[in-house]
Image (cartoon, rainbow, N blue to C red; front, top):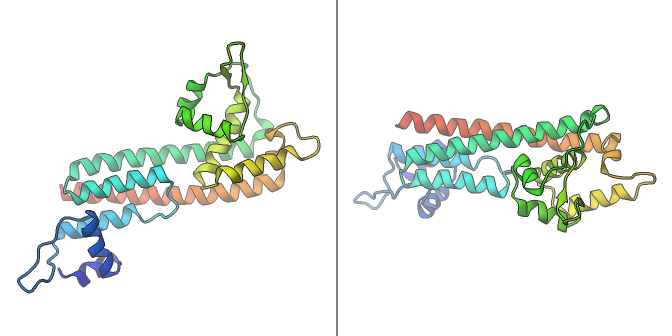
Length: 240
């Protein structure tokens, strides 16, 4: 195949194909005697994998890195490793989708949720529960997104109510809200008369409408990304 042909098959500009070779997203392309590139079916497969991996522009930085890793392994013809990375990526997307659904459930049903336990969670337990790094939680706390009570030994004591707040923050971060934007939102809540904490305002019509709009878009994009990575898995498995 010539450059124009493979570009047409993958719906990209010919220059994109050349860049993908330069960046290592596809294998080195042999030249004919006249200097024209001669692409194989494997190059077409690598291009298809790359286009699917980078299809969703919404992807967070950590997800973008996972997608790039799949493409780089494919470009090195390490398809078995690329397949494993794709499966890990799909699992990660499924987890992100689950957290989004949980956050939506919390907002939609907040008035009906009964906090049935007084159990206090440690910082490490919360990080594991939300699948976040402990440093991420500390960063959110340092930036004023939430505050936590501490015991006599100055250890953080997280409650069920704190967990609900963190689910909301986590989802807003996944939807590309900046820390500054979330902080401003939380500050506006505290300025409302008679509002004692974030939970009181989570059920106001404006917040619910805005939040559900954001999470609707996030859920749709996550589902699209999951569909794309499933296609990548199918492509690689068909090649093996």
